[in-house]
Length: 354
Image 1 (cartoon, rainbow, N blue to C red):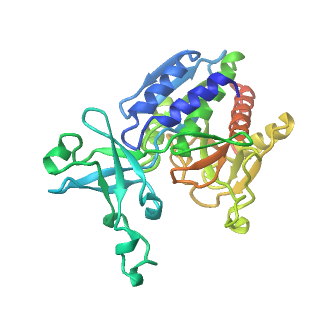
Image 2: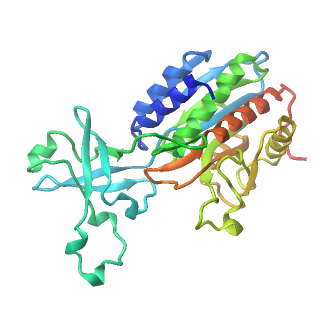
């Protein structure tokens, strides 16, 4: 992966964009897309599109990665200026205790800390009890309610304030990898396709609100009306000490993109992806999804008369935490596999299972 792409990725990961408030990272994504796509636009729901017009215009292929991240939203400001909040997406409350947060305030970002009673003040019989979100608060240093309301309001959203770090062996750690990395990967695939224009017309889409509603997946798929789609998300790496490979499969950082079999995935697209990975020498793993995938694919494959959908995932350790970890080689290989898939398309390509 070249230096420009790495710089773009780090900038994209750093901008707060919780579900429902994705404007910041979406703007960064579109700015990069404008350097090589034929058409770049946003829609009323907040999705961002980068379109590459194919030599023959058909089929139409959608590449989707959601750009939102989990976060939190202010629900109440008390008389002492403390902020009470609800989760945006799925949090383990234990992860939140003592974290710094960055709120999207009225005049700009507002820093705060998530507070909890100190261990010294907790009765011994309560120390083993798990924290609950309703028992946590955010302290922005305000002396009273009016002072706090000068900076935030009920409904203000925010994220954990955690930067990007480079780790050894080509790994990075950051918040928002789920799933800013998917939005990044589909745009990198489009960048590769722009270097040798395919027959198909392709739209890379940074979808919104996957963590809470799938709104962006529903609306973008209906709007673009693709015949085929690739959804890029993250999946749980199982190469850590407490993993259960019998239940969750054998997924390693650096082991290549993970291909989903079952559920929302088209068996035709799955077989094509496996064949292309083996032909191109791209390492990959397979995970079983007999029910819902928990990704935008669950909405996209149902759009209009149905969309032949494939799901490609990036192995991710410590999902839904301030320190998610991935290997950049998996991202690069996912983009290469997607580009190879699109280049296989022709107007007569039939995605009907037979």
